[in-house]
Image (tube, rainbow, N blue to C red; front, side):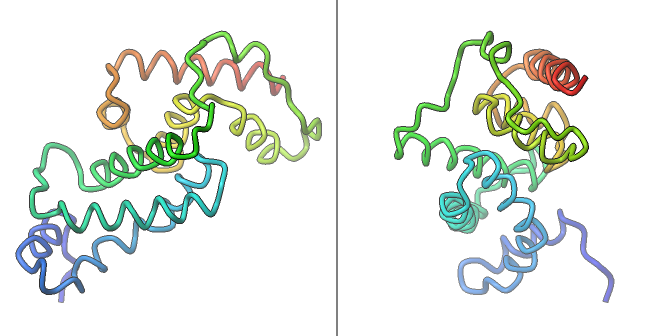
Amino acid sequence: MSTLTERQLVALVQESLPYDTRLFQQLITPYLPVLKGYCAKLLNNLSDAEDVVQETIIKALTHLKSFKWVGSFKAWLFKIAHNECINKIRDRRWDTMINDDEYLENLVVENNDYEDLPAVLSALMKNLSFEDRNIMLLRYRTELEFQEIADICNLKLSAIKMRHKRIIEFLKGKLR
C-alpha cells in the first residue's frame, strides 16, 4: 500500500471519526516528539509541556471534523499547542510574557562555555520573552514558514520577520 499524503490522511480521519481513532493516531504520531519538544522549550517545564500536549491532542481530535485547509495540518496543530501554552501560562500566572522590546539588552549568558554552543543557545533561549522564544521555536524546531508563524501568533508577517531578525542579531551579538 502506498504512503498517504497528509491531506489524504486527514480526509480519511475526518470520515472515520468519532468511532475509529486508529487513523488519527497514525496522523498525529509523527508530530508528537516535535510537539512535546516545542511545548517543553516554550514553557521551560517538561511536566507542563506533557499536559499541554495531551490537551492539544484532545482538542485536535475533537475539532478535526471542522478542520479546513486554510494552512497545513501541522500549522493548525501547532496553533492549538500555542494557544494551550498560553492557557497554561495564564493558569500558572507566570510573568513570562514580556512586552518590553528592550529586555534583550539586559540578558546575560549564564554559561560562558562557548565551546558548548547548544548549551549557550539553550540558556539564551530560556531568557527570551514568550513571544520571541515562540517565534524561534516555531521557525527552527517545527520548521514552519514565517506566514504560518504569523498566523499562529496572530501577528503580521512583517512583525514576525522583524522580531526574528532582531533575535538573530541579539544571539549573534551574544555569541561573539
